[in-house]
Figure 1 (cartoon, rainbow, N blue to C red):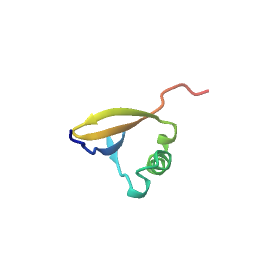
Figure 2: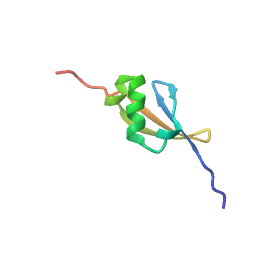
Figure 3: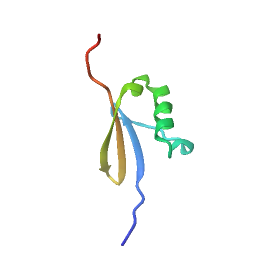
Figure 4: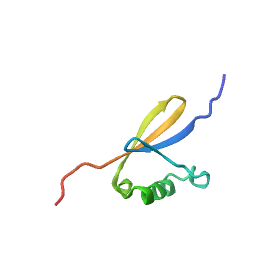
Length: 68
């Protein structure tokens, strides 16, 4: 049996976002940090995009809806 450790990547609108080591284990704090770069992330849906090229990818997808 072999254990492979996957890196995590966070993406928004096709852009890989930075993951500071001190926030890597805290998803809520990481989302808040990413929202400082792209404010729309606060309302975005978090989608597990699976493993791509040995990296576990999580995507923030913009919430689509109507106003009012």
